[in-house]
Amino acid sequence: MAAQRRNLMQSHQSWTDDLPLCQMCGVGTAPNCVYGSDGKGTQSHTNEDGHLRFRGEDGCFLYGVFNGYDGSRVASFASQCLTAELLLGQLNSSHTDNDVRRILTQAFDVVEKSYFETIDDALAEKAHLSNYLLPHNENVSFHQLSSQNQKVQERLKEVEQEVSGGATAVVALILNNKLYIANVGTNRALLCKSSSDGQNQVLQIGRPHSTDNEEELQRLVALGVDSARVRQAGQIAGQSSTRRLGDYRVKVNYNEIDLLSAAKTKPIIAEPEIHGSQSLDNVTGFLLLMSEGLINALESAHGPEQANQEIVAMVAAELAQQTSLEAAAQSVVERVKRLHHDVYVSGRQRATYCSRHEDMTLLIRTLNYPLADGALTPTQGGRIYPVSVPYSNSQSTSKTSVTLSLVMPSQSTLTNGTNTASTLEEGTPTPGQSPTATLQSTNTQTQSSSSSSGDGSLFRQRGSQAAQPDETGRVPPYVDFSQFYRLWGSDHSDGQSTQGGLGPQ
Image 1: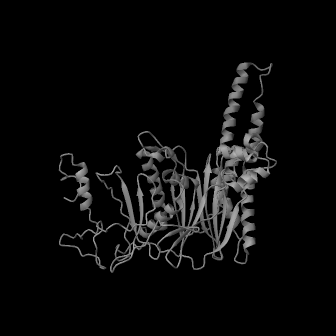
Image 2: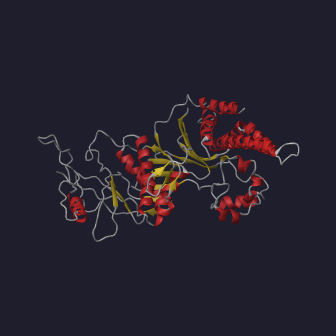
Image 3: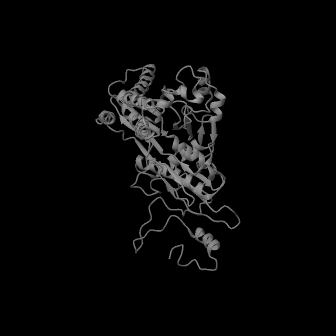
């Protein structure tokens, strides 16, 4: 029976094989990690996230990021089933906004019901096995009962692993050049738009369905749930989300959960909150879909205050450097992973929040946003590539400062809703020099700096034409590290010469 159930779920993998992948997006991922006392990380479980990125007919595009937990079954099933419910002829350009919202809501409902149909037999077997664990019978010896119970418990554990788990989802649909976002749970969608006056407007679409969302708590109150207890607990059956896909424990057996036992009907739902439509006509920017693991890792390292602006700045930096969206998305994820790890090993105040992180997924969908041209030099392409160097100052206790300098044409500041955050500032270009934007990060706190790239001493000015090789075939460097070598030598010489160590020989 268990083998039949597995074959049934595996057969769903062919539903979307013939749909073309969208080439206008890229996905980056990183597995979960737990750090040891030596700073080394180990993966505690297989990657449970999932994603989708398909191009349908009639100008329809579908993207999604799924954060799975207690296994990847629900995230994998949802990514397949949801695609089949939306891109196999259900949507077309004649549909109104109300039609699209209705179809999206129905699709999530079908995914939920279809998943539970695949585990119906397993749930029935689980109930049967639970009832089989009876008290001692006079006609059965203690040894026989103990042996039978052990076998039943082993099988019960296998079935429990087969049916446990759930997922949260954030899905983006583009139809008729209009954007719709459907959210269930604690993932996040960000839309970054470059305005005509050179600003980057960062818009978080929707709020997470979590135990600190007042609207969600009021929904639970209407069902008879004590919101104060939920807020204090911070989690429901091990998760902070109040909406999820799957997870039979809070869907089928919610009356057995203390926090939910007073509910008059099912309190944890899979109904999506849908935002849109939002016209993408004449929009230049990018759309970001992020799993909860990526959000939490960045917020754990630097705090939640500027997380949206930070991730957008990272994406903009990588799009200015990378020649593929896949590479840009992966580089951003790796950067967040490195930031998280560096905070942990630093032992600073936020290190206690960074002992581990969950699986991370980032999907980037560009909207008329240019990528770097790999055939151009930094000056020819009008870009200064990100540079990261250690800096030491004997008069400061701060030993590490990272400055990322990048060019973002026609983009100057980030705006989160109506509040402008001066994370990026466009400098005044001089002839032969491109405008630059700077993101400053220190080892004591997250800073959003509006300064330009210092006095420019790190970068030697170059003409508009690339330098020609000398007789040895080398070209003059456009980054001057002499000041860095002097500072490093003064702090680390310890009576020894820096010759033979750092610096050009």
